[in-house]
Image 1 (tube, rainbow, N blue to C red):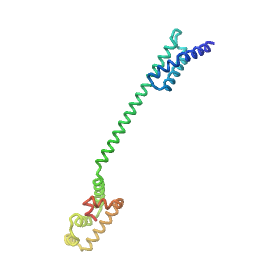
Image 2: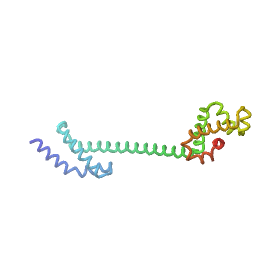
Image 3: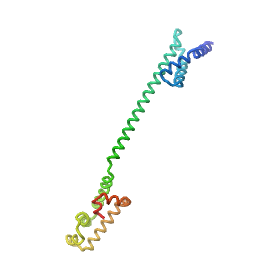
Image 4: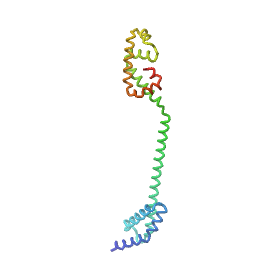
Amino acid sequence: MEDIDNTRDLNSLFVNYKERFVRFAKTYVCLEEAAEDIVIDSFMYYWENRTNLANEWNIPAYILTTIKHKCLNHLQRMQKEEEIRSYISKTNAWELDMRIATLEACNPEKLLSSEVQEIIDNALTSLPEQTRDIFVRSRFEKQSHKEIAIAIGLSTKSVEYHITKALKILKSALQDYFPLLPLLLYFSEKSLNLF
C-alpha cells in the first residue's frame, strides 16, 4: 500500500513541478527536449533512491538538486565535445595547411629528375666497367666513337656495341618513365645527354 501512495505522490509531484523544472533546466541546456529528458531522469533517480532518503527530505528540492547536477553534467559533456571538435578542427586545419605548404614547395622537376638520376646511377653502376667507361665518355664527356676507340684501343664497332648495350640496360631500368620521357628529357639536362 505504501508503494501505491508513493506512486500517487510521485505522480502528483510530477504534475505540479514538471513544467517549472523543465523551464529551470532549459535555462541552462537551452533545448526543450534535453531539458525534459533531464527532468524525467531526475524524477526516476529520485524514485529509485527514495528508500535511502530520510522522511524529512524536501523532495522537490532533492529533485531540483538532481536536475542541477544533471544539467551540469550535460553542459560539461557539451563543453568537452566542443573542445574535442575544436581540437579536431585545428588538427584538420593544420594538416590541410601542411599539405598545401608541401604541395606549394613541391618541385616536380627536381623530384622526377632526382628519382630518374638515381635509377640511371644504379643502372650505370651495374654495367661492366668497360661498358660504363665507354658510355660515360660518349654521353657525359661528349667524346665521339672514334675518339673513344682510339683512347681505349678498340674498334669503332666495339664502342658502338658497348653504347648500345648500355642504352638497352638504361631503357629497361627506365621503362616505367617512358610515358614521361618527353617531360624528363625537357627538364633533365643529364637525361638529355643520355639518349
